[in-house]
Amino acid sequence: MSNEATPAGRLVLLGACADDNSSMLRGAAGAPPLIRAALFSGSSNLTSETGICLDGHPRMADRGDVGGEGAAAFVAIQNAVAEVAAAGDMPLVLGGDHAVTYPIVRALARCHGPLEILHFDAHPDLYDELDGNRFSHACPFARIMEEGFAKRLVQVGIRTLNAHQREQARRFGVEIHEMRSFDLASFEPDPSAPAYLSFDMDALDPAFAPGVSHFEPGGLSVRDVLTIVHRVRTPLVGADIVEYNPRRDVTGVTAMVAAKLVKEIGAVMLRNTPE
Ligand code: MN
Ligand code: MN
Image (tube, rainbow, N blue to C red; front, side, top):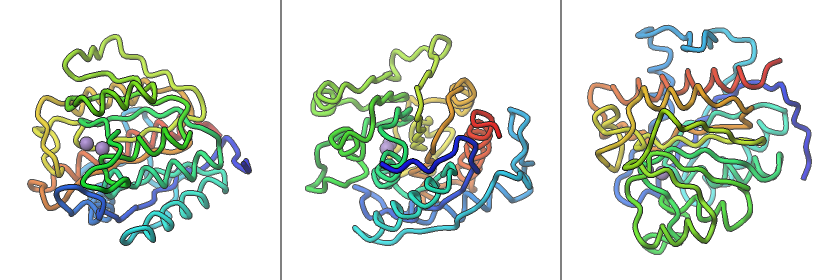
């Protein structure tokens, strides 16, 4: 394991344009340019609620987009993330479907060692396989845990826990905060370094973010998510925002929610890793 990374890195946006591991609907591969467009649309300013402004920030960069189909997409994503991490920088990856988290985390764990992951999702994404695909967007955290890329996995927003995934969670020691009993007031995310944040847009209630492939009512509000994100004080070695599906969006509102999350998660990454 090489560790060229320095603690004070740049925040680097990276698009991961892949959705061929989606089990039901494609479309998420088209998300990254639309999230960037919403972020820079002038509809809002680029100052986050933390007070950190991303506009012209000296430690912000954009690596552009990578992606494609099948194994080649995973290789391209993993290589791009590895390059960012080796430079001592923090990738904020825009998906793509959730399958992209596996090559991202693989690259980061090889650079930094096993990660502690805070995962927002309606779904645990712990299937051993789905429809015969072990790299489905329903499986990334099974692969990550099997291969030892995470030392701890904490999930928030979960509301689709079936018997198979409950067994998988037990097998891997996953800490699941189910939506039905979630208490925002007492939830203090306290990941140890190296920490990673993975955000599936369907963690949000579809009332707030309709542009997702799988509507799962009864989710988090945008405000709930921002409260949790702002509470994270650990330096993050990377993060992703995945599963925005522009084909399902309504007037671009979900792109705006994703852009808001880029702003707030990005600001927390800069805040938690000071120069
Ligand atoms: Mn997911
Ligand atoms: Mn999901």
